[in-house]
Length: 211
Length: 228
Image (cartoon, rainbow over all chains, first blue to last red; front, top):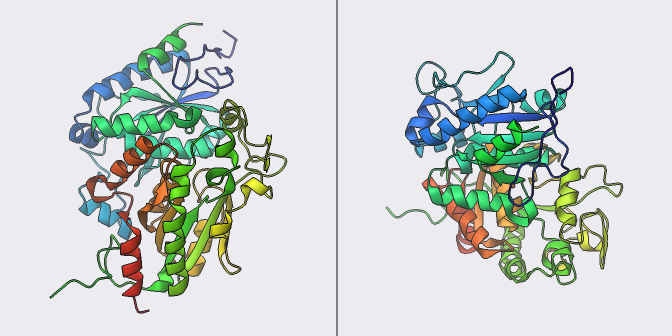
């Protein structure tokens, strides 16, 4: 370990290739993204297992010195027509305030963490997420959240176009159905990882806890 | 009172105005869907991506006849590859022939090369917008959003390849930006059928959270019954 606390890490055993692609990563150039782990969505999707797994991962990531960013969906006071239609379909976006919009009390973020709010699925769209990650020299992203085919995949697709090397933590994500979760992760790995890689939380932890 | 034939195609309903509509043809390039192109050189099956050329041709003809805006996209990189991320190149080189490498029809997915061109069956006409994109989404690092807003377009009909990759990215990004999107499911395809079917199931779930999923015949009917 260097005097700055930067740790060089082992590659994660992931599908379809070991992460990251070039084998070079450290606690300084890697962030953990926690997407949409708010009280409302966790309850609506019965996603306590994925949330618990993500909490465990957060603890390991913080011990290792990784940067953490968390996102919340928030309803805009005057959403556009597309957002209103989606609301009418039952995709209820929590309004800012106590209750569904907030993170559960178990999710304790350090002061250094970045929190962004976004109305759609994509945590990069009209938020400072890209700028803040790049300003810190972040190249690699470990992604957890809900739902898999919503916030997780939309954000990972955009991250990939932006050049970030991405890994979706399969059991720290949950879809609106098990079928959609599995299908979206299979599409992630298609073509030798068109959108990056997929691994279990255990595989990620193994790489973060060994030097 | 019977429902108007043009209603139902657009998820938000309301009045259909041709000047607010565009059709987008995503990445119908030789490298993705022609014999001798990149995917074919890799030994992958291009029959799925070729099968949608006739229905997309019909959708294109209907759009041109109706006079709605037509947009083509091409995935490709600058010749010095300065806009190509290292991980994107590495992933494609695992297949033996990666982006930027010299293939039988020029350098793979490099702007200006023979394989990068749009297939002749769907060649753009002079006044049609052609968007060059370095990423999967047609909105990433392009002028597409600004062009659509300048033209007053709020409704986007999506066709092209591949459904699980660039088509899905473009539809998701269009939704985020407030465009009302409709994917024509018989005018899009993936290299692998299971990924195509899974993509459509996800896009159709909950009534289509990123927009509607419709078909060529409904698109033609909508245009025929839209007067202005």
